[in-house]
Image (cartoon, rainbow, N blue to C red; front, top):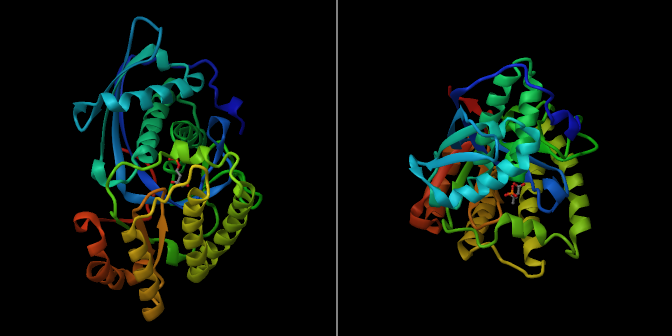
Length: 360
Ligand code: PMV
């Protein structure tokens, strides 16, 4: 599929008014996307677990308007107008307008909220853009009822990517690959695709407990972070490493090799942070408590043999990953030893999920 296939020909149907509602989850990358080319094309492929509980729920109401000059929408967050979110949505609409020619024909009301606290330091851009993209595709499918499911989901992921790169991995479950990779059939830089390998049962209900170390605004936006990979002294080597790590994790996921999985996932998290520490300007996005948690996880794993590991996003919070079969032990460990390192003792329990859901 090329970008051209995502530009629709004339619509066969007409609709004047209605609404849709979708929920879309957050996702956690195992092999990280860090660095991009023009138009949100990733510099390297990535793979993620789709999450289940951290979600954005978005209702999109649409009404045909008289004029067709410009995009018009109202935006509500938790039921209240939210001016500060508008610029991001405006930019998103501008980027996708060429692929959704109906956009200027309607006035939209977007009513959105998250299932996780807004000030948790958990980015809502992935789930938010994915939920909006699903709603827009529902409208496009009304206008073109012959659309296949395959086209619907691929284009939804394509649109979400234009809003926020990693959002393209929040459409499908439960393991998603984004970015062209020699060993992943159907993989593309344009959209995320479900991992088609047979995921071993140990990974099927994998748990992700998110420890909220720092609930503040991100110190470095991901836009600035991705940009720092241009001219970065280690960029090319890092991009090649991501290809290798994706091959290796693919094998670990199908064989149920938890120890190989742990090695790749933790190395990826630390590499992401190493890229930021070695860019110009340079940043340290971990906090002292991030390191405390990592050291406690390593000691617990060493002492008990329980296969628990961590990953990080571009921030200080820690995602603790572990098989369902050791959930009781790991939650006991988290409560006894890690909560003291979380802001207000806060953490969020999540797990691998199935992707966006229609609620209408
Ligand atoms: O989707 P963005 O532009 O916010 O970038 C997200 C990048 C990481 O979360 C750090 C890694 C990833 O692959 O999700």
